[in-house]
Length: 493
Image (cartoon, rainbow, N blue to C red; front, side):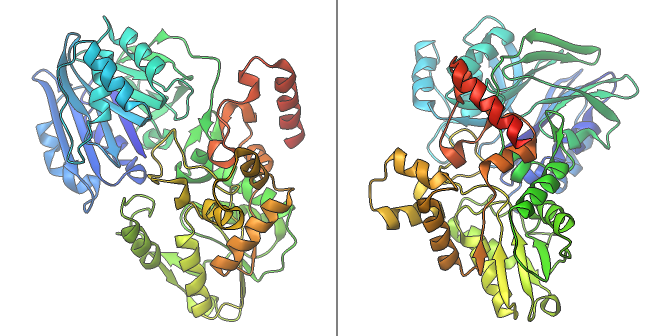
């Protein structure tokens, strides 16, 4: 995953840009960069942050930046922002998202006159550079950004910094957010992935960009260059997992959603336990909601060592993920021995982390370990965002279990049964995951309950990783399906 922040002020933007970008550090651990434009033109710096926090890398450079316009990013993959000189002039660009049809777009760029791209150390070209080339194939930034949104298979939100403004373009179906903040003293505006990034910087919420919307931001205002699209498929995992608790997307706060999620988990459960614990960090609010709904005490039988260990989905090496999963949680044995524990984690992806957590709880004397993931079983690897770089659906514990139960290949019709919590196949899958992981019991959040926890209609959410569906029927023009979908959303509320 990645995150970005941009600001346009009547005075120096450097400190706001520095702190605003740093507030996205939970979204990436590999690369970070800042670009500022001032009287002397563009100033840029990019650093590797795999072993050093963002602030440590950039703090000593702040005096070298000067200007009132700037963009910054935290990335888990490519180096950015990039400085580009093209037919539209000189500009900086940063992106969030995933391009699935990169080969097709490279060919299109060459057909449009692009002669070459720089290769990264992986042998691939930088997708942000590819995005810039497609923008430059048109006669204005607005036209180029709209063209880019039209051509990308996947999702891509973009910030472009020119000598006099910032262009912000939310991806076509709004899978990731772009939020506009307004400076309380009237000195300018910011645009950000996380709304929490500006809360301590003297901004207030202005508005969220709509899907595919493009705006031009200056210290004096925000001008809409392209109206938003009607359809939206914002990622539901924003609330469940990788969004920051203090952030709000589409008017819905992450922490409150997780509290509701835990409460709905509890409403379908009747387990007896001595305490409820959330797997830190994102499982904590879900667990508090469960505890509040049931009266089962909330406790912390293990603590995350926060000073140095990153979120464990970040490293690209499975061996490193395994090591971090086992090292970052430290048990409190006095709160574990002879107790029945109920754990709530945001999700089960590969099964490594929660399996290791369960083992050390048993090794610390736990009597029972009951597990309640805060989302449905993940059956499909995300093809729209880079929050997980799984190379195959077989990285998912669900798909490995289904393969062992069904053999190869498994049809979409059979997978649909495994996504349905009311089928025998679903029950068999859960029992096998429970057995392999050593849980005393296992119950996932239902998709309809998760949607109700968020509070948006299902047709406004992307739930692909849970049910394999892209655009909902209500986006296809099928009014009968749309009516049924709206009725289901009303019932869930």
